[in-house]
Image 1 (spheres, rainbow, N blue to C red):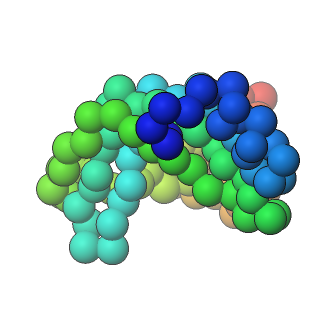
Image 2: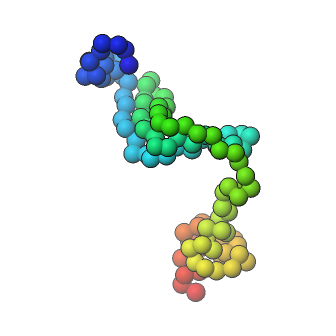
Length: 113
């Protein structure tokens, strides 16, 4: 913020300039980088700023870096179906194939059987 400026004045000026901002209810922000490392902000304060049709996030808080590892792999759709239904990987893959990749449909199908 500008020094010696009242926050209400700043909000009024931003509104006049067509800049909208609203808080985002977030407790942690994770930025996954191309090299596999992550920047984690926790606790995080996040503001969504919209100006001239463009949206951006302003993130503040405590930053830390994390090294990537194979244990951090994103779960596959089959993993998610298995976790939700307790089925085998083969059953999950078959249900996903039959549902055209629709997770919800695959889970419902397996829960009915």
